[in-house]
Image 1 (tube, rainbow, N blue to C red):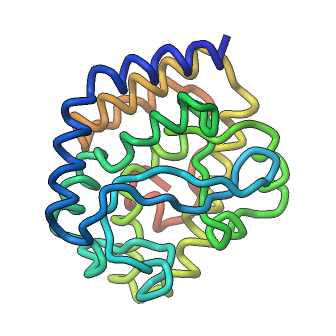
Image 2 (cartoon, rainbow, N blue to C red):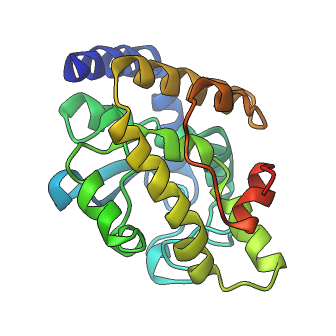
Length: 230
């Protein structure tokens, strides 16, 4: 049922958004790096590496320069058109193709590059690779503005790599494990709906009432960013 739902929804989205996808492709071909799509290695189902499809938003070899796999707020590696695509999440739309062909699910844990994946605790790594990663998920929903957490860490004088590992990934791992333990098509529908609302209304936090029993952050940094009481 989940796979059938993924094929149906991703196919409809690709069909409906095809004019927009074509327009963005043309703009990217005429600007920036003169390339529209970027295939990036991510860790996926059963820990295997696969290629995820994204619109180009950063300069070439960005993972090898600056802050590596961590994108900062106002990151100089992000192209001007890339800022618009990232802010609106249009850069993720090509991944509906990855869902359609079976590399991703619509909802699941968010796949990461190898270095980022290894920042998860080992127990989390072992658990989440048992299911297919997703285009969106509860971790992506809660950390929609992950760059904001990094910016807050920088203002507090924290090392961004340590912040990512010890604050973001520790809590995100707990969220991804919660999803696996509480999976249902109803949960998937709620996450998809909440994701769509959060894209349209970035500061919306109403999803918290939709998912009782979600893990709560223990890090003061994450609590401050998400507006939780600690």
